[in-house]
Image (tube, rainbow, N blue to C red; front, side, top):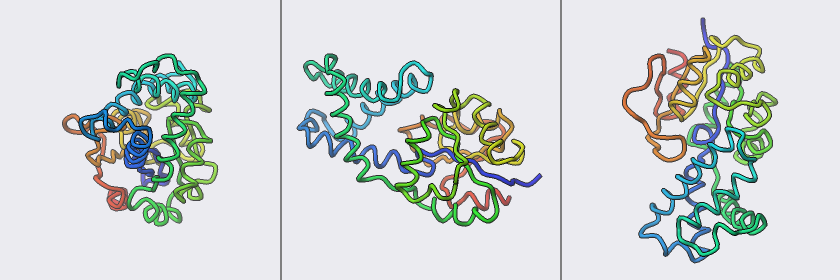
Length: 244
């Protein structure tokens, strides 16, 4: 049966999270006089992403709130850097540090190459939606800022409001239900092999892994893709992949 709907992940699938994250972090560390503490900028980015993955996993597991995860990232990052008093930062101090980073990060945010063109091509042909491990308000603001929110309308499912995170089958099925389609009629596109691609496949969707070679946010590629997972290297490859 032909694909009738397409669900997308957001970060590093439609939105260049890695690029804006790196630019924002380095600009903020430079402004704070901390960048010189690292042997090279890539070391700062690697540490920040290690901390981010650990604390975001706690957030998606429901152990801490979104705001708490942000403050935990600051304290853990600065502690690993050896900053005196990092563990004792107040919520206000940690929140202010993170706000400085987000101001720089948001100034650099953009859609991934080809995202708008692909969505424009798909809009008359497919029902479009989003399934993301985040909150609706956060992802709506992000998609609006990069000019992509209008393609999805109200067809967004996020883990905070849904109550479970990818790769749980239920969140993918909730996305299909919003589109009014059966899972086998829906393609899912995401940059994380295990969470996005394998999770969608196991929920009965057609899984497309956007493997851009990114070893930061979302994990690393380890060997060949799982059975039933189709691979694309960039978003402009997606129309032909779906047609094929």
